[in-house]
Structures are given as structure tokens and as C-alpha cells.
Image (cartoon, rainbow, N blue to C red; front, top):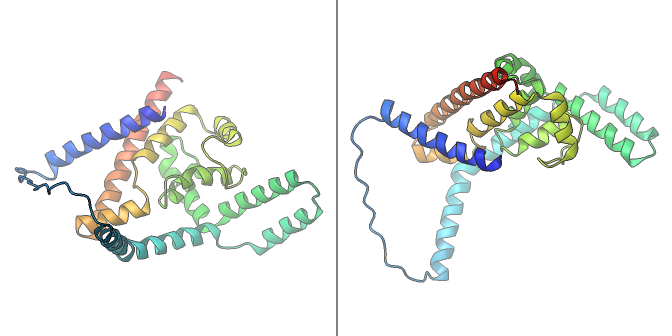
Length: 244
């Protein structure tokens, strides 16, 4: 399955490049000639200066925005902080004696806190947009946190299904919850959407810098989001028609 996802992503990249070349970047391609240097064993001094220069440039150009955006997502997923809810669960935790029940209560609190956060409210608000794809509000919230990094999608689903934030794609509890709550057609559409929509913050910021302006990041967001929505919708409808 993972191999098919990888191949599908590569094929979609080639198709997208062809479409953009045909309808957006028209005209003759300019020849690109690169003179290859002689192969020599690089000196440690050269390696140090190259690595240091590239790392400094990345941290200076992209690091500031990445940190700011990550803090924004963290803030949106942790606030507003409902003190009444927190105190209620602290009282319940004080009465619990086993670690298993403590873990269940902590996960339940994280789920409710995230649902009531700004990010959870946004997820509920945009849920109708993703309803034609078979996504519920939990999946919509996971897509929002996935803007920071795609792997965060899995841990977000783990929190929203009250399993904790230390789950991964091989966690039996998460797999069982997905099977019980997410139809097969919706799951496939979700995989397609996550595969296509805007990449992580680091890649997005570097793209904007290399492309020559932040407006290109806006173009990338619109293009990838619309493409992801349309293809996920097609997959969802086809799987439903097949009746899998």
C-alpha cells in the first residue's frame, strides 16, 4: 500500500508538471547547461563552510517563519484553556488508583481540550467543506495540524480518538478506531488528500524563498488544496459506487 502511495505521488507530480507547463508556463524552455567540476576529494574546511553557510541561510530565511507558524498552531491547539474542565479531570485523576485508568482519563481530557480549542472550533467550522469527501470534524482538524508536518496527522487522530499523542500508524488502538469510525471510502480519500495538499512548513517556506516571493506560496496552497479536494472526491465517489 505504501509503495502504491509513493508511486501515485510521483505520477501525480509528473502530471501536475505537464499541466502547468501546458497551461501556465508556456513557451520554449530555455537550455540549462551546467559545467561539471572535476571530481576531487573535498577538504574539511570547504565542507564546514558549505554546511555552515547553507544552514545559516536556511535558519535565517525559513527558520523565523517556521517557528512563528509552529507557535501559532500550538497556541490554536492548546487555547482557550477551560479551567473548569481541567479542574474536573484533576479531581477525577486524584481518585484513580491504576495507571490504566489514569491514562484513559488523561487521553479523554486531551480529546475534549483539543475539541474545544481554537483549532477544534476551526475544524468544526470547515467540516462542511470536507463533508463531500466523507471527512468528519476530527479528520478536518488533523488536516489543519498536518500543515506543520504530515506525520502530526497521525498523532492528532490519536488524541481525537482519546488514545493519546504517542500513537503511530502501527498502533493497534488507532487502527481499530479508524476501522470503527471511518468508512473505507473516506479513509482512501483522506490518504489521497494528505498525499497531495500543501507540504510541511519547512518545505513550503523554502519553496516560497526559492520561487521568489510569498505569493507563490499562495498559488501553491490554492493549487494543491483544490487538486487534493477534487481527486479525493473522485476517489470517494468511485469507491462508494464500487461498494467496497
